Length: 120
Length: 111
Image 1 (cartoon, each protein chain N blue to C red):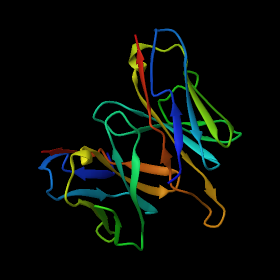
Image 2 (image 1 turned 30 degrees about the horizontal axis):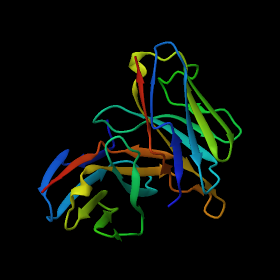
Image 3 (image 1 turned 180 degrees about the vertical axis):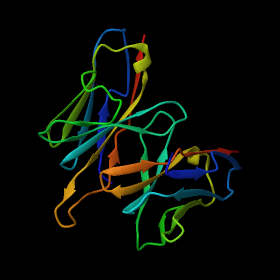
Image 4 (image 1 turned 120 degrees about the horizontal axis):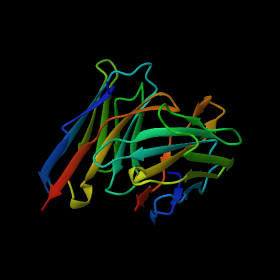
């Protein structure tokens, strides 16, 4: 399968600071990337969908000014948690898909390794 | 209401034994169903992806089945290994970019 690299895998930051998480598709061009949040023992919760070159679409309840998403190229999307607070501590995961012109569908989503964010 | 239900929530089995995980869904129109394995603190890794016309698909010791009429899928793990200990997540796609996640089954394989 395709490779999606997420960095960093772990980060600890002070309350009030901002943290940037990168998601890269290493061997394919990802037209669409997804950002998820996962609390312990719970399933993944979609935060936002980003298409290359356009603004991200945020799910209901997700603050777009707090979780800044940039998808400037077909291989890189970033999630910036601004003014982080302890309640933002969580596991953040990205996934990447590409558009198949033949079937008019997005291909299977490939997940990054995840980022454990701890805000102290 | 979660539209993808998995059972059991957790399962403990002895190394070498087989097990079957269940996934029932209500979402429609169905596009495909995927099983993922997620190790603790890691991102999910795809095991199988099944479309409407596929009944069975294998990936090594993992075999997934799909009954689109009853909207049920199962993941059978044969000759379990300690490294199989993980969460297994069933994901149903309505459109390719609209995914519904099950809550997962936590499998623990003990020696």
